[in-house]
Image 1 (tube, rainbow, N blue to C red):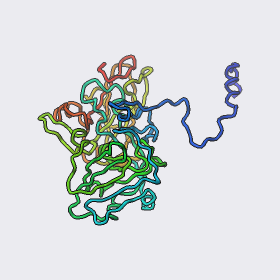
Image 2 (tube, helix red, strand yellow):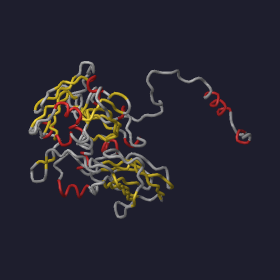
Image 3 (cartoon, rainbow, N blue to C red):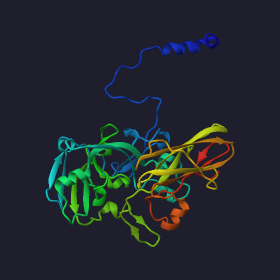
Length: 387
């Protein structure tokens, strides 16, 4: 130990003395280190209140996204709602219409589950070639949290569904009164009325005090600031399931209610905008998810898809949640094309961009889940453009 200290200069001693100074006092709410700069990127629509912000997935550890970095998508801004005044009305084809306060809902049995949430427009730019420059801008409208709330089955049993009830219209309390038609089969499966996220109340941007959570389905249908559930026999074909969040096919017809998010994955390191300092050992890592259940396999290629090898999956591997994969790699310093390919428990295999376009064309800006290739140049730079 004495030998290690022989060469210490005055600068090192000064630094050691600095580390002995008293730190910050206690605070009421914890903050991250000022040296951590991860932040969402925002994209505004025609008005300041509408737009989205993308999560920095390449800087995320594990599978949980911090609440403050969870992606956002708003159509009319974020309302300020007093939970003591907020209510949920359930009516329509029910035997007993009821109005629930937040206090009423929190008295009911609750559950906590980890699920991903993904905008139907996530990776929409990938329909066009050479547009997704990095993970955040091309895949960042997806995040994963632990959600807490009341199973929707519980409240629907309290109101009692009539035999002809097949759908419900979920409506939010934002200025545009966001509405979506939701098939009741899903609501009786694993949907919940969520009021908690990652151990604390929902953030306002995530629907405080209450949102609908339908795991594995596109984010738009998981209505935030939930105020009303109107049980019906048919869908309403509202704006955000016809003019938006539908898929225009090559023949001019549109697929509607394409709710499930198909198996998808992306390598987050190394990925676009990053640089490898030189040849040597690295750990390739990324995220995979599927609305069909569990991810069962992730393969990685280092030669643009000519050969693939299995990447180990981190435990726990959960249904309809992010799954972290990792694979050791020795880079030889030569150009490489790396990508990941996910398979889920239904047997569905993530397609290439070309395979996806062959079936669905390029008219849609929604529901892209093609394989993403990153190209590594001899200088270590990682881009979305062929080296």
